[in-house]
Length: 257
Image 1 (cartoon, one colour):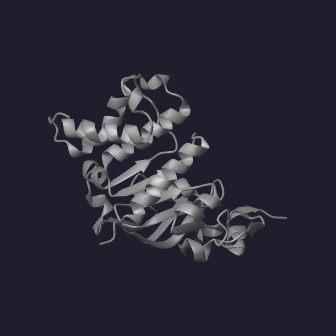
Image 2 (cartoon, rainbow, N blue to C red):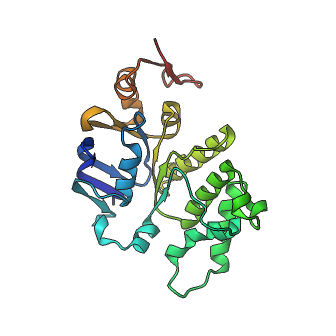
Image 3 (cartoon, one colour):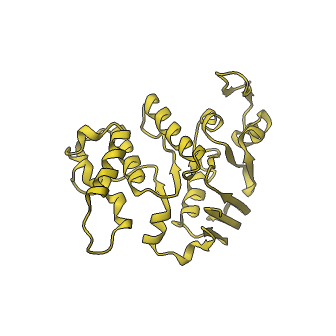
């Protein structure tokens, strides 16, 4: 059963068409990278698929049921979203912030259990934040806050992960660790993952599928190895690029002349 399906989806911002009559299916095992220029609508597409923005036309199914038929709580049990930036509204401990991810799984008066806290601590450990669980979130650095937001998302344990620029604010080792983690989740058929990315090389390395946002609402979607070519990247980024191929262990895409 597909996790998420978009049918005849058209998305607009003012008079700008992000995508027109877009069909897309996300299944367990998929790790999908969304690529496009700044302002091309990567975040808008992700937010629409998450149910945060209504499309101009078309509809989205979550596990073969219309997205609009879910309550917010029901939706949060199935899909989780990582925003570009996570605001801190009030002082609380790192552990308490992370435990926000468990609330969709609780009844109205149900207290957090040891199991809930164990899930949160496991996520904090993965993000190298367990030693800071009693620390005030307001004292964390930008990179630590980003890792905490990811830990809270993992604590939510959804089947669909929608990630908006997951490498934001992170140093290189943490970027690689997090991309590896979500890619492995998909490879093990434990989840479906979709992420907006600025680095084409990350898409090549960690995503088995891509969505390419072009001009005038045109969208290309398919296997990464098929779609990430010099020609397509030139269309996406409106500049020439050099594709060093998939054979080399150090293969990457760089700006050409």
